Length: 126
Image (cartoon, rainbow, N blue to C red; front, side, top):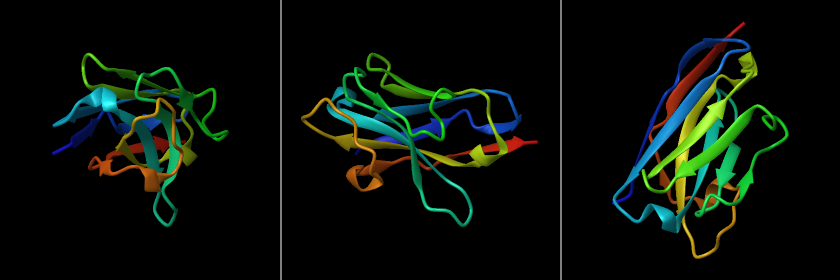
């Protein structure tokens, strides 16, 4: 019954910013760690950010560290991805994912996440 709906993608010039949102419904949001993943054509799906169920712990890989910030608002059942200083290499379909857990930590593996949104396209032009 978990439903995830991403929004906020679009076309932006290099150096610009986008803020992605993911609306969660169907279960208790605070029981789920959340992640953002992306997949470009011909590439494997990769983690771009993760946040623990309380919001107290976050993870991001070196490729986006300092540029992307994940956050969540448990009162609004929403997770965000703020993307700054965008590069053409960031062009991909961005997915929101949820993982039911008892632990207040992050997980960087897509295999951990049982629920996925439909994706939102981010295109960065040079």
